[in-house]
Length: 191
Length: 324
Image (tube, rainbow over all chains, first blue to last red; front, side, top):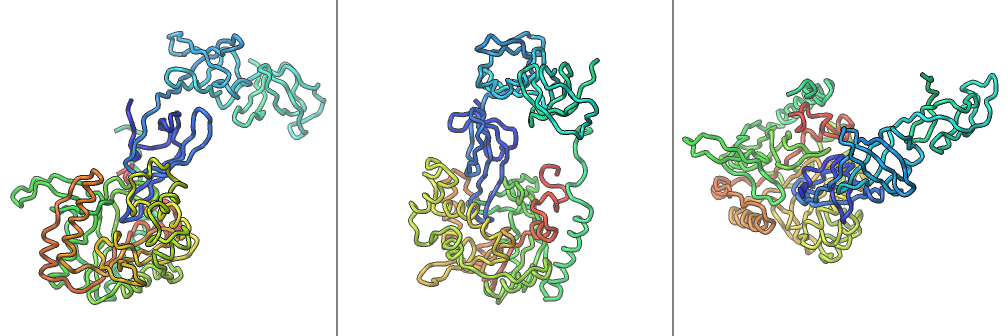
């Protein structure tokens, strides 16, 4: 496996640290004029999602992690695994376990496309797109005359996710939701 | 080359104008004081032996001049000392210098260095002049002066002269793993603490000169005993935690200089770095005799960064390394 020296460190690079795959977030070069140079590096451990700060003597190197992000279509779940398929026409499928699916579970809709991060060829994490469009399956009845200014109520979406929506939203409507904040964005005009 | 290659400068036009004003101001400062501007080679026969400064090699084909392997200069120091030895009197230079592998918010592998030498000055005389130049331009308060020993005691809670290697290593574990620290030299412990603990603390302390470096970090400064400890007549100025300059009451002893070059090269070999050719011309100039003097090198890009209230050199260098 390849390795990267500190002077190749940059945001987005995937490396192995203490045996875990990590993504480099920031790399700061510090050096007293006449002294030894160091790199102060912020990384996110892709296994635990924890952020790490580690310092390296400039010139030290870390092994590259075999981590790739691929676009994949969500197919179905058998209860134990959630099955995804590559969108490159190869029909290659990958089963992701509950740990890999994580919080993406509440945004999973069949035939939608997600980013699946593979580590050594197996799904490590599943990331939903920033925005998803989902149907409302349950919410209190709307009240006439309510406007966007008028407060909010919970609505349950087809995936089971519960989001706060304006009072005028009714069952059967399709909503655009921001998966990063879990917030309602807008109604989607039915086509 | 694609349409998306950024061709524009990283800086704003006002920043370029400030750079031009800064340069004019510096030249006026030295003209007033009768210090002569000089130019020396950017491409030289020798690089430096400093263990932590890597020269960028070049391969010119000026074989007729006996010149087939050369180095981009990391500072104009050696050539300027040869001018001093030949009787130049006080001199300054605005030089482009190069240091391999140095790139970050406060580093660019090519940068502008203002370097000057004052025959007859001691380190404290020159600190006063640095203070006039820097404070005159930045409009900041005059720097205080603290010993290297005191900044460590105060901001890192450790005596850099008397603490054991084990004590220093234990403190460094705040940033690095014991396995990484195992092969560290004493100066590497100190440099880590300087960069990660002391410098950030100095950012809150107002402009401050740090002086009295350990003998192992004397570089080209003379050393004397103060408070029973061997301390180098070396000073650095920190403004808002930014290391702005490095000055010495210069070593003029040829033998001592030769010993330090040899020690540097030994340390380079121990660290797995290539040995560097020793600049015989500088040794010959020291042999001929350079006047008692103090000299200092000041980073003009960082000075401009402070002037403009920025915290990244890319705001003051038109084409930093990523778009040079």
